[in-house]
Image 1 (tube, rainbow, N blue to C red):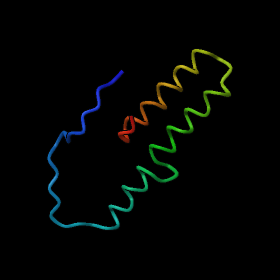
Image 2: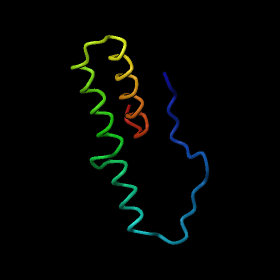
Image 3: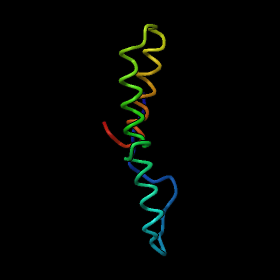
Image 4: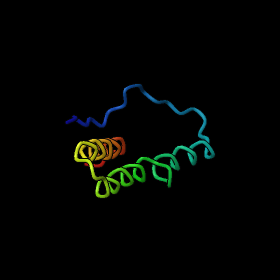
Length: 72
């Protein structure tokens, strides 16, 4: 399906920390509109889906969202 390597594509060097921006980024990753919440919505919706083709798509999308967070 995919290979997960915990390696940055581009090096990151933080010169001036910005707490407000960090809060926005963390909210997008773990907040109500973040990756984990999105993956759980996709994976829960598959149980109410009457079409088998769409169940597979929702499963694939949900697991891909989990991969964005690094959960395995």
